[in-house]
Length: 189
Image: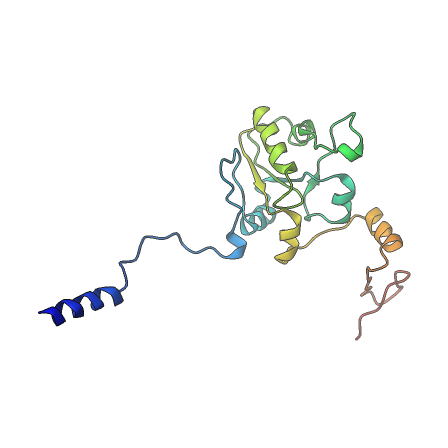
């Protein structure tokens, strides 16, 4: 009898427990920060790509203009800073978004900034909610994760000139057959 009880105990110990209902596993492109106590929901990289493809929301970059000019998500609009503040104290102006969407406070809006530890898009989203906007979401992973996950970025011409002149580590590759951008390299053909 004792051997039987030991055999039953061992069998029970080796038998896996009944599976617990679990969430469908997420891919990295479906992940968000899932911050607690959020006032506005987050979108994943996958959702942001869909939004950009179908134009279902206005996407705003809450970073200062120079950061936006150097690298932003194609299709995103930059938010000017609040009037009267020096650039060193840049705070995105919620009124700028209100003007951009034509005072339609139910317009779908997605905000992003410099990544998980940047609070600009979060603060801006809360200002928009306080102003009566009802469809505000954030891509809180921001531009660094967007780039890391293979998302395309765009540079403005004035920023390209700045990087070309000031950043000695930048490598420019001109793939055109005709004239070359001064200081660029041609790809090996």
